[in-house]
Amino acid sequence: MHATGELLAAAAAARLITRLVDAQAAYGVASVVLTGGRTGIAVLEQVRDSPARDAVDWANVEVFWGDERFLPNGHPDRNETQARRALLDHVGISPERVHAMAPSGGRFDDDADAAAAHYAEVLAATAEHSTDIAVPHFDVLLLGVGEEGHTASLFPDTPYVQETERTVVGVHDCPKPPPTRVSLTLPAIQAADEVWLMTTGAAKAKPVAAALGGAKPVDIPAAGARGRHRTLWLLDAEAASALPTGS
Ligand SMILES: O=C1O[C@H](COP(=O)(O)O)[C@@H](O)[C@H](O)[C@H]1O
Image (tube, rainbow, N blue to C red; front, side):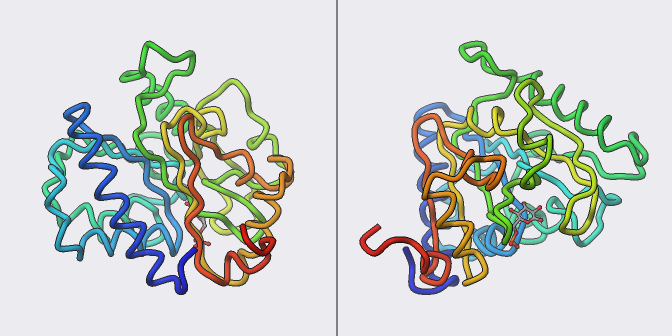
């Protein structure tokens, strides 16, 4: 737990740099799944501004997204646009290693389900053969948490959070704008080696306490986000304020 959101973002950025360096030492290429949201983007800005930033060989980082707001290419609210501005435009990423989810108005026009099916194919194309789910090896998958407990674009009490077959879904009628999104499903998220849930602010205290208190994913989707080897909650004091003392 960190005293402020700013400290949390700086600490998470330092962890992320280390995780990517370690993954590159082990495999040559590291892979990260990015999140949108205020905290997720603040972490990327901190990576950008870190003196340790170029300890990472950015040309050998595969970049994916956990969810996307289904908006036109370059829209300021797209998670991709924000991640590019915060970090990707500032480091020597290989364009072919950046796997963004499709925008609306392009190849798939307004069909978010088709965009999701295409992203599932992108993931399957480099899937690990050692697992039974068609996604690549993800070293670290970053997530935010919404006020009602959503994570990626999986909202409570929806069929999307209960999906067991598909790795990517088009998400409709979201309670938080924009209403149409594309999201990894919980099985895809759970295939990552490490899942880091990062959030700040008093409005997140209740969903954080519920998720860590054993809520069902259908009620609090963040409760279902777990990594194969590690699940890390990175919180500021306000977001941690409803947790039992000593946790
Ligand atoms: O819309 C989204 O919101 C969540 C949480 O965002 P925050 O601003 O409350 O931190 C984020 O995790 C997700 O990627 C994004 O699409």
